Length: 114
Length: 112
Image 1 (cartoon, chains in turn purple, brown):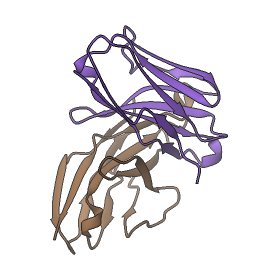
Image 2 (cartoon, chains in turn blue, green):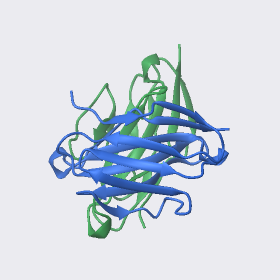
Image 3 (cartoon, one colour):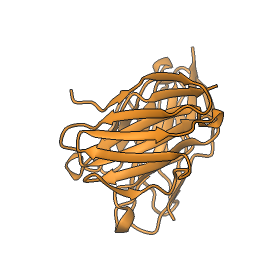
């Protein structure tokens, strides 16, 4: 049963620290998404990639957030410096035309910035 | 711009009662719609998609293009249905092809 893998599962960090979240998409999926989930805003799309190229990162605060895909098996989301308002669950998801446009989510990275 | 609206943040029903979670959308093209479910501290899981016209865990959803709705229904709710439910719309064309837009989500609580 192939799954999207995310690390870390839980992270508590101090304001100002750098946070890096990693995602391994399902093998063969060519589209990768980063979503942020909060009680107030629900699910927000931060960025997404197709064939490792960024397609849309308009939902991501550019001053402190960055998203990359160094290779087809790894996507990263970095926050530097982190702030308490970044506390949220960050989900990675992957899909492809072969999945009929269905996307599959990872377990999420639960970030708390104190 | 595409948009998905779930008007109810919270929905409570008793076990055995019918449940309907509302979803409305705005999209200029032909929509492709999904329902995802998230149980406590777990990943979002696909519940169903309108193209498949299937029923999963007793849930069904019919696309009504006239009303631009894709409401999720179940005739007899169970306690294990308690979860967060998200309606989502796929952008199937243009430069944003493949982008999935989610509604705000509805927290369903089924009481014994």
